[in-house]
Image 1 (cartoon, rainbow, N blue to C red):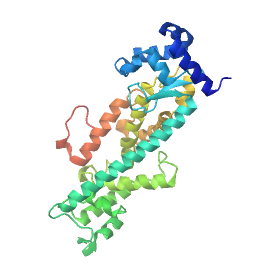
Image 2 (tube, rainbow, N blue to C red; image 1 turned 30 degrees about the vertical axis):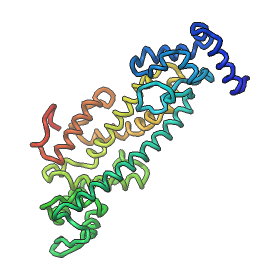
Image 3 (spheres, rainbow, N blue to C red; image 1 turned 90 degrees about the horizontal axis):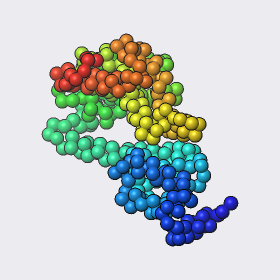
Image 4 (cartoon, rainbow, N blue to C red; image 1 turned 135 degrees about the vertical axis):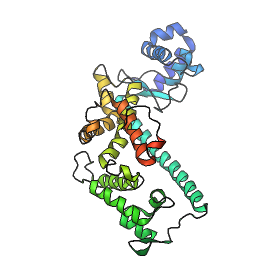
Length: 319
C-alpha cells in the first residue's frame, strides 16, 4: 500500500502531466463527487473549485470507498478551499460532535456577553431594582435573595420574573401554581437527575413570566414540547440537507445512525410522543407528518402565554 508521501507525489505528477480528460478517467470517483457537487450546489461552489484539476489538487484522492467529501462546517453550504475533506462515517460523526461542542461553547460565550451587556443597561435604568434592596413579602421586609429562595430560582433570574409594578407576594402565588403543576415522575423527563433539576428550575423561571390567566395551561409538559419540537425539526432538516433522512443503502444508514442530529432526534422523539398524549389538543398530531405545523402552533401559544392574546398575530388555529 502506497504511503501518504507517495500518494501526494503521484497526484502532483498526474496534475502536471495529465490532461483534464485523463484525470477524469484515472480519478473517476473524485470526478463523480465533483460533478455531483456542481449539479447539487450550483452557485454554492467556490469559483476555483469549478475546475476539476484545482478541486482534485485541493482535496486529494479519495482514501477509500468508505470516504465521502464532508463540509467541515455543516451550517455552511458552500464548497471551496479549506471547507471540506474526505471522511468516513465514523470520522464525520466524531468531527461533528466536536464541532457542536465548540459551537455551543462559542454561543455560550456570546450569550454571556449579551447577558452582561443587558444587565449593565438594566442597572443603569432609573429605578432599577438592586438585589441588595428590601421588598415586602408575606407582611415582612425581606431581601431579594430571600425572594429568589422562596421562588426556588436563582437571584439573577428575578430581573426577568419581577417586572416593574409586580410584588413578591404575586410571584409567590404564581410559583405555587407552578409547583402544583410539576410532576417529578413524568415519563418524558430526562433520566439524569441533574438535567431534570435544571429543567424544573427553567420551568419555574419561565412560568413566572406567564400571564396569570394562562398559568394552569402553562404546564411543564408544554414547556418541554416548546423546547424539544424545534430541536427535532432542526435535526430533521439537517439530516434532509445531507440526504440522510431516508437513507438508501447500508453505508448511508450507518452514517445517519452515527450522526449527532439523528441521535438527538431519536432521544427526543419517544419522550415528545409521550408528552403530547398529556395535552389533548396536541395528541392528534403526528410527529412525522405534522411537525412543522405543531411547532408553529406551540411557538404561537408560548408567545400568547407570556404576552397575552392581544399581542399575538393569529395566523392559524388558536392553541
